[in-house]
Length: 147
Image (tube, rainbow, N blue to C red; front, top):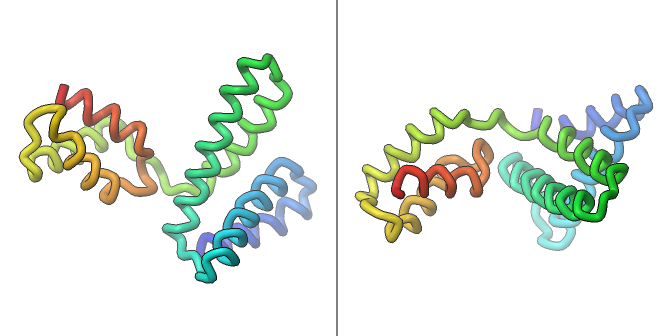
């Protein structure tokens, strides 16, 4: 079952169970998918949908930070609930040990010696770990290893 089909099924279930948070979160994901499909006139595959979900999570995390500054705990909670639902549709994230081992392999393969070579490493790592680790984590771990 594709990710889009899974989202449709989960939306039906959320509507039946009157789970407002899950229903609204899935609708938000579906809206993002439809927007891209209409604008770019192409059918999105699971990898594209995962990238969209990650983008949605990032946007909501930024909103949470802004709401915390403004002391709007009600809105913080709402955004955090959406982040939790969005995360259900991402592949399992790599642990720190697995990520570090994978990055060490890439560093050896590209011959990176210092922070000057971080661009080479990040290019390879972003492709290898797409969907299972976000760019910020990859970057921080790479800096830790090279630094």
